[in-house]
Length: 245
Image: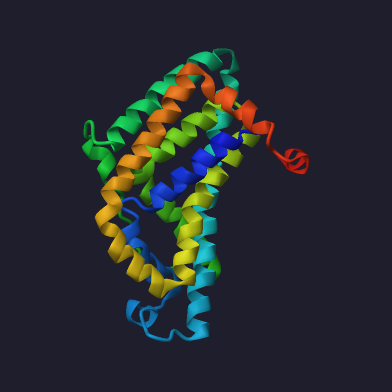
C-alpha cells in the first residue's frame, strides 16, 4: 500500500486544519454542533456532561465530513481506473497540478477564488448526533473551496493510483489528519483556545510549509520517484500490517 502517500495525505489534513479559513472558526463549529455556548466552554471547570456533549457531537461532525472526503477519494480513483491506459499522462499532469498548487500556497502567485469558502447560514442544527453528521457533510462542502488546493492535490494522487481501495485509504488518511486535531480541540477545549490564540502568528508559515510539501510531492510524481519511495517503504512495513492493507 502507499504508506508514503498516506503519510503525506495525513499531514495535508493537519495543514488544512491549521489553514486561516478553518482554525479560527473551530470554536464556532464546536459551539454550533454541541449547543454549548463559548462562555460555557471557556469556563474554568467545564461540567463533565457538557464536555462530553461537545466531544460526542464533534465525533459525529468528523464522521460527516470524513464521509464526504472518502467518497471523493473513491470517485477520483474510479475515474483514474477508467483511463488506466493513460496512467503516465495522468501522473504527469497530476504532478504539474500539485507543483502549481504548492507554488500557490508558498505565495508565488495568488488565486483569489481559492482564498474564499462557502458560508452556509444554518440557523438551527438538526437535532441529535445524526444532525451533527449532517452538519459535518454540509461543512465539508463549505470548506472545499478553501482547503481545495490541498484537497485537490490529495485527490490527484488518488486519481493517479487508479485504485479505489487506495483512493479511499488516502482520503481516509486526509480526513484523519483534519479530524484528529478537531477531536483533540473538543477534548481539551480550554487548551485549544490558548493554542489557537498563540498559533495565529504562525499560520502563514504553516501555509508556506504545506506548499513546500506539495511542491515536493509534485516533483516526485513528475519524476515517478513516488513509486520508488512507496516500494522502499514496503520494506519496513510489518507483515501483519501489509495483510490488512
